[in-house]
Image (tube, rainbow, N blue to C red; front, top):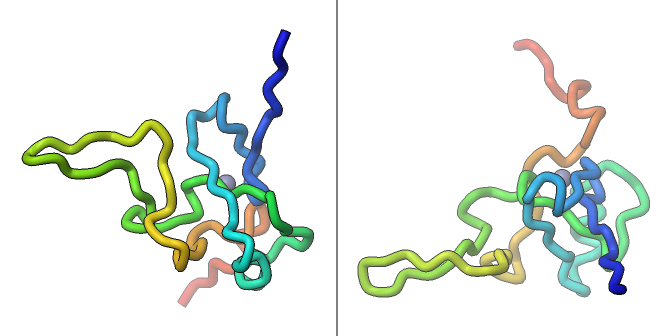
Length: 100
Ligand SMILES: [Zn+2]
């Protein structure tokens, strides 16, 4: 009997199996940088973020082969320099919405 550890997004708590989202691990040398971007304290190495915190162009979904686009089995971040940019404040994001 094998038991798979449930993985979930550090910010919004989405579980990969339940939502079919991809979760990305922070590159080891980027933990401090990512923590500064994420309002929620406690982010550390091995913490995971789901795809909704990244720009579409920063997620590597596969590769072009001739005129066919092959989807990768496992999505990855496009490069090591990718940082999370979206929905970084989780449930308290409303406080950042201000009317002009
Ligand atoms: Zn998330």
